[in-house]
Amino acid sequence: MLAFRLARGTHPLVLLRRLMVAAASAGVGFLLLSTLTYALSHPTDPGASAVRLVWCLIPLAATVHFAVAVARTDPSTRPRSGLSAIGLGPARLSALAAVSTAVSGTLGSMVALLFFLHLRGDLTGLPFDGAAAELLAANRPLPLGAALTLLALVPLLSSVAAALTLRPRRSPSPTTVSGSAPAPSPAPAGLPWGVALMAAGLAVETYASRGVSGSPLPLPGEFTGPVEGNPAGVLVGWSLAALGLALAGPGITRFCGRLLQSLRPGATRLLAGRTLMLEATRIGGPLGVVCAVAAAALAASALYDEAAPRPFGPLTGLGAALVITCTTATLLVSALEAKQARATTTESLRRLGTAAPLLRRAAALRAVTLLLVFTPLTCAVGAVAAFPLSS
Image (cartoon, rainbow, N blue to C red; front, side, top):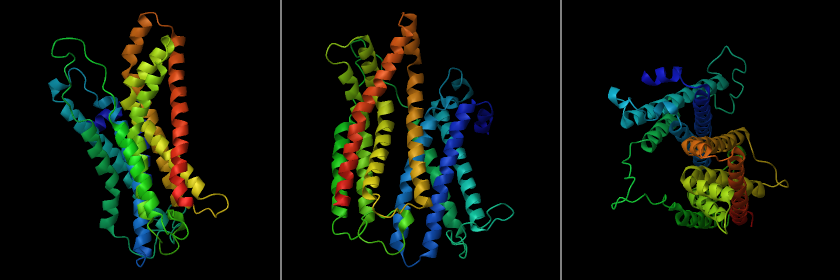
């Protein structure tokens, strides 16, 4: 009830972000229900149904990631003075964030179920009744338990991930043992692990695509018969490579900050580089995820070139749109969170006489540096990922 009361007085942009989470949850729920009906209409082809279910895990993970980012930037769940006196400490606020995330995900799942039943023809009285009856196996009864289980995945996983992310942590002491000033923020430790995961993913992809006739990675829209080869292994290899790039994102972002501060930097380069180093963990991960999605898109476009017939169906387009939208929105929300986190520092710089054009130049320099470093890296990963599949 408290979550609903806080939602009534929330800023419209915050409500918009929550509605975006609900919309993403609805899209994933519809994909999962479509996978269920495909399995019902093709009981003798479990391989294609399993691959469709594996494909649904990618937009599911992107939606959960976006929901956690929205919960982390929700102003109603931030610790404030006076809330602990009425029983709303950090633990209660993290639970409140989990409940709010679950409400948004449940709303989206309900919309997905209603829209799905409407397109099947189970609900009548609206336009487009039964428009996709054949595609959604309207001639077969829908197992209610399985449908509700699939629809509960997004609210459950999102709320658990939000609670774990926002759980109260013991903050380190601001001074050292000897009472001196704190050391700078530690460097992200994910760069070597990210490189290792990228190498492992490419190795798995190469092994899984050996000796496969036809397309080694069939998309959901082109399933017309039994699946050949090991498409799940290829998809796992792609996922490992994408996860490696996401883990390496904070380390690469910190490297960009060090690069800006090298060779006698001026005030603009020094400010831009120092800001990138401090915000490497906050924006590096979402930036790495966006680059991983872009690399996968480049690899897919190289694999399914113009000479071959396009296998992209409506469900493939919906899944791709969900992944691209959720990852991009997560990056924008993380950038907004970083801007809010350095608001006090920015205000202090302005009081000290720092000109506003200097701050704008530093922000533009940060963006250009990240673009110049991550763009060729994304293109290289996409080309290397597509090579074993096209050879």
